Length: 249
Image (tube, rainbow, N blue to C red; front, side, top):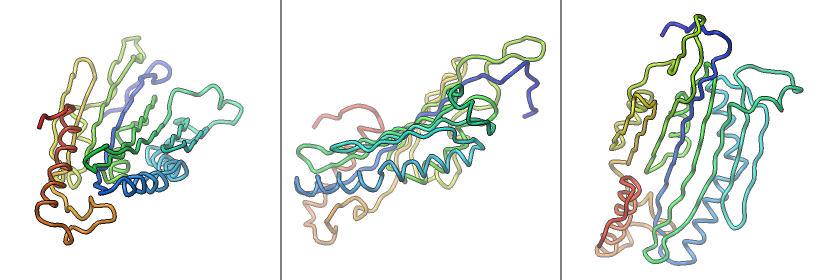
């Protein structure tokens, strides 16, 4: 697209929100607690900060400030202010329009052994840098079973003649910005409100190896009846998250 000639700064706000889910089966209460402790340590604030720093670098943003926190009994958060251009430290306090945030939520089902780890990520930018450029990095960093994404453009900027510009780039679907090698692994659906500049995409992994979903267990050691029950519980968990509703039975 030809570069827009604007009057002043491009102050359109472009926000991409992710919910990324990893599903697991842990047989006992002790195993479920161990899984939560494991995932909580693996995705601690330090590692999440490293991921967000890499994301900022990939979209051409400069990190201004980082706040990170690990929580008790579980979970972590990182907030990162970013700018399109490198600026003197004395101006850091005045730039709060672009940011990256991540929050984690490990939890488990009280009865059927299913554990779910969720990471919520928001990438909000203004100017020329685009949060859509973070898609490949974030999806591959978490290697998730379920991904839900919302993209919204808010506000307006002005052309040199004074006319309002409500969208500064072409988009029909979030999927347009996800590499094909990733998309082919997932079932997807979209809800797009073009005139409202709101775009939604949900993705669910098509195929999986049960061994990758068992915590402290091997599929080969399971009886067929037990294996089938676990697979049903995992599939139900994934489908309920994908469709956003509880299934009866």
